[in-house]
Image 1 (tube, rainbow, N blue to C red):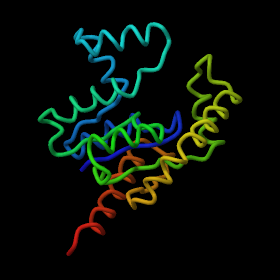
Image 2 (cartoon, one colour):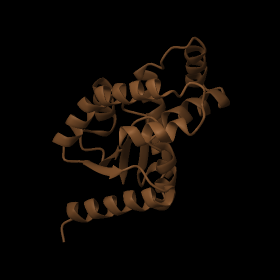
Image 3 (tube, rainbow, N blue to C red):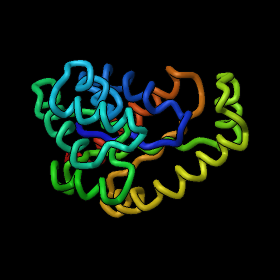
Image 4 (cartoon, rainbow, N blue to C red):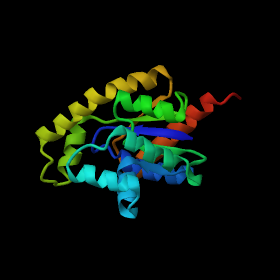
Length: 189
């Protein structure tokens, strides 16, 4: 199963991607982890990424797609994967489509969270840069940037929504349940 997890900052999608990937026996493919891996092994792409990130710039889509292409070509990804962190823009959706095809994703799992509860959750982490105002701004930016992606994936009929709040195990069960239900609807009897 090839999945994409989308959710606002602090929704727990990275944690859930790891847990669901483990349950399904497929890899969690995080762009951040890919960048760190390539930097740590000193690959050509890693050296480019290290220079870009050291300058405080965003890694260009071409480099991200090149890393993603290498990652999903690995044997452990042959049965599927969970993408986390890419795509984030409409241009990146097109790049991903070029790589895996428009019908390349089986499901896009959208984490639905109440903004007020998300703010409380993130404030409880105690990070210096987490203020109510900055968290609410990140939530707004996420909604503004993500809606065009959701429109594309909604039109393709691959999105499923999951309540992202609750105990970690409860949310994991919810996601797996939604995937099982959507998979059984997609599979002819």
